[in-house]
Length: 189
Image 1 (cartoon, rainbow, N blue to C red):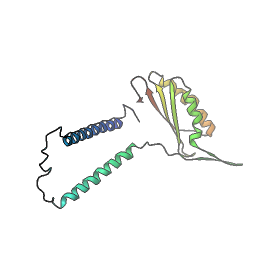
Image 2: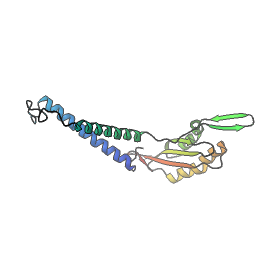
Image 3: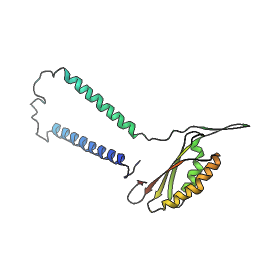
Image 4: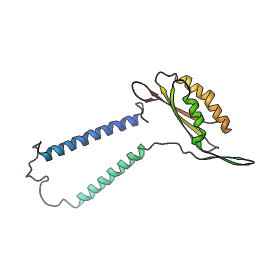
């Protein structure tokens, strides 16, 4: 999420910014040295002392370091993936047959109803789990000066009961995340 209160996201952005600055500085140094604008290195002098081969263990250490760096980069990439709850197609069995429901389609009226609430500018919903253990995850984009208590009350008292009734459920656990936007940018609550 793009929130200032999300510490891992802030750390991620800070580390990416630091890495970007370091790479830009290294690239600028390499270009300036190659073009002759920096005379820090003597062009006739070798870059490393001696011409002999390094000890036999050096390539193994370099390879292990490269593999470790690659695994860390892969771990970072996996952490960037958006984690969405696992959804599955619902099957409602009746005497006359089976009705299959796509969870994405089921929550569309709920999203439209939430977006019609004063102070809300967008919403998204994910209905996870099966009929035996459903979970609803809501992300509500609201203005910074919106009354979040009133929005939550409308969701709990109007929108969610209608969805429960439409799905013929006694209970439906719901998690609501508010994303506040305004003049200072996005923020999540």
